[in-house]
Length: 449
Image 1 (cartoon, rainbow, N blue to C red):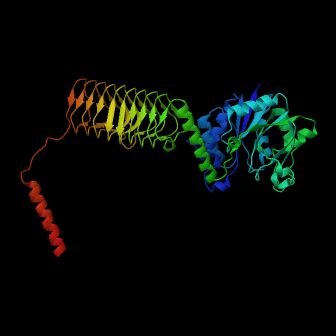
Image 2: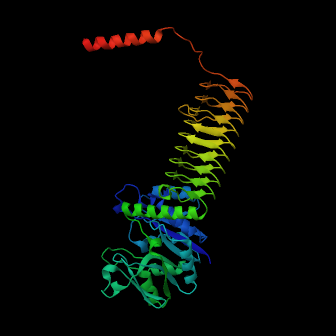
Image 3: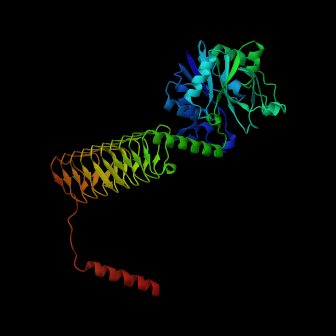
């Protein structure tokens, strides 16, 4: 069955009390709308349409960075969910398959649930996703007659008897594209808000003799986010699920509740994650690695058996080889560390390549930025870099070379050579005492004067 995905991301989200569009608020390290897109992609849609509105340019820029092939349409006036879906009509002109409508602020719907909607579509013209909600005061009711969905009743319009129904409307729907848009063309806005509601297609479909049904899912899957409090709750749910999945996959989390994952974090079996570790987007940790406490990783790859931290920071482009060590208060950015390389203390390695089994001494810095351009440092294999070495890039250090402590490297170092680039020490007899006496006398004179 050919399928298109329509994700609604046009709302203002005024209850977030934010200048940032609601769907750009992060959940699991990525914009909120990404979760709905990812769930829908499991259906392998031929087309994915994102309907934008409030903050459209920012939302569209973010969407194109994630999926350059996504189709973007705008709802310039926010006139309801039915009106929003209609904005995708032109983009899907000629498409003969089904459409699934998802919401960018509802991040937890699962591919399995969407698969059940697809299965139900083989027997019904319109499929609605519903859920059981004991505390259901906010939700529209799905009025069922056996497997048939008769109508959707909004809470404010429901009778006392209808309000006793706990099967609620999530808003997500599926139908053949031509049927969906044809039904929407008949939806009116004769309601208190003057909006065109997607829910109205069920009544119109039934009046035409079309078959409508509902598929049930867990309430947690359709948690909508409208406030910062709900966003915080959703983050907690996301983290709990991510931690449980990691443990199930063979990862050791010493203190699970203190570890924070991104949506795309990948950690191999038998890796050990100490307390208070934060994974930003695009991090992969291979099997047997050890991430120690208070480390922060983002857009980085950690090889098998490597040790990171404590108090380490891996920034975008960090590539740490198998069995390499990145120690306390070390920052790696856009740099590769070869197999078994060690950077254990108080160092910055940026825009660099470090060869296998090389040891980087404490306080080493690759001076990669001249105020305008970035420059690269290349350090060979099995080299030894003395503490407090400064590499003034661009510069290359060969295999098995060495630098003396405190060296400022401004020229290439040939393989096997030792570089000493510091001023010769001179001793000035008695100068320290004389200078200190002079300073103390000056302070005393100032105090007495």
